[in-house]
Length: 163
Image (tube, rainbow, N blue to C red; front, side):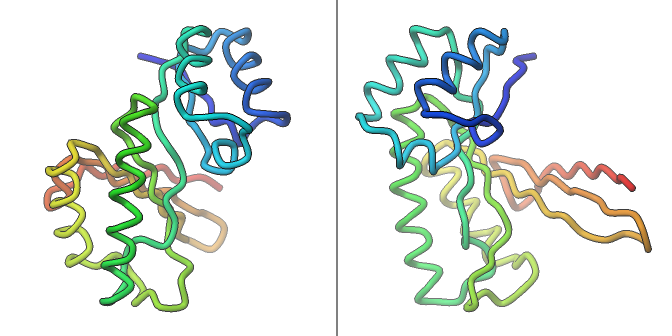
């Protein structure tokens, strides 16, 4: 098992975060998109820094506004996904963390059509998509459900409840 931490959990530049994560003894890193965007350097340079610090990219996150979109928004989302998959390949990861859609165009819920389409993307790019959804299960209890899988038509689901 590789223990990892997301770059969003730390302050500083991406370089400082990579150094701190490595010094703390982690062997895995979860790259948060804003850290990548604001880094003043190439993806190749980031990959070299990670290699120099002995860090494996566990996931790239988050991929926003993906599920539940009708055409033509869905097609634009798949185009964005294709670019993310290329970026993930450069970073050396095959796991994309997909967060809930907040797009005003989203249909709501987790559509079967989207899962089928994502299954196409997974098979084509050999990546795994993971959705994290927070939902209420009682008056003072919430749950987080993770849906993982290369075959999103038959996903693996894991739920954690907390108060």
